[in-house]
Length: 146
Length: 117
Image 1 (cartoon, one colour):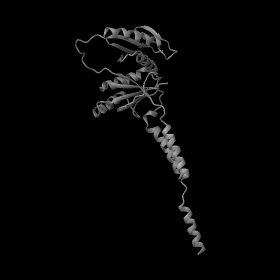
Image 2 (spheres, helix red, strand yellow):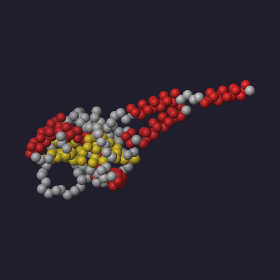
Image 3 (cartoon, rainbow over the protein chains, first blue to last red):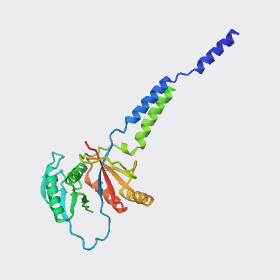
Image 4 (cartoon, chains in turn brown, yellow):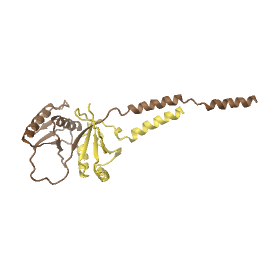
C-alpha cells in the first residue's frame, strides 16, 4: 500500500513541469530577432536608358562627362574635381549645380554620363552619384565599353 | 527542453545566415544623401562581393544566366526593380557587367544599395 502511494506521488511530481526557463529563452530570442535588422539599407536609384529609337525634334540636352580614373580621381569634362583621399566631391557638386542652374534657365535638360574605369572602386561611382544627387541632377547614364 | 530550445537557436542562426541574401559578405558603399524608401516595391536583389562574384538572390551565377533570370522575373512582373548590392571595393567592371546583363534583359529600374553613414 505504502509503495503504491509513493509511486502516485512520483507521478504527480512529474506532471508539474517548470516552463519558466523556456519562456525566458523564448523572450530572449524574440528580443534578439527584433533588433537584428536594425540598419536599413538606403536607395540611390537611377533610370537606365532603354534601347529605343530617339524621338524627333528633341531638344539637345546639355551633356557633361564625368570620368573616374582607376586610382579614384574624378574628372568633369576633363577637369580634375577631387582627389583620392576624400569621399566628398564638393567641387564636382558645386560645378554641376552651377551648370544645371544655367541649363535650367535656358530650359534644357542636364544629362551626365559617368565613364568609370573598369578598375575603379565601386565606392567612387557611388560618391559621384551622391554628388550628382546633391547637385539636383536626375538624368544620369553610365558609359559602357564593350 | 532547454536543450531543444538551444538547438533551435543554433538552427535558426545558421539558417538565417544561409538563406538571407542580405547576408552575403558585402561592405555596402556610403552615400550621405541617399534615402531609405517608404515603399520598397517588388525587388530582385543582385549582390556583387569584393572579388566580383555575382549572386542573384543567394545563388551565385554568371552574367548570362543573370540576363535569363531577370527576363523571367520581368515576364512575371514588368514592374520589377533590381536592387544592386555591390561591395564598395569591387572593381567597376563587375558592376558594369551586371548593368549590361540587366539592360540586355530589358530592365530599366536599377537601384544601388548604399548606407547613409
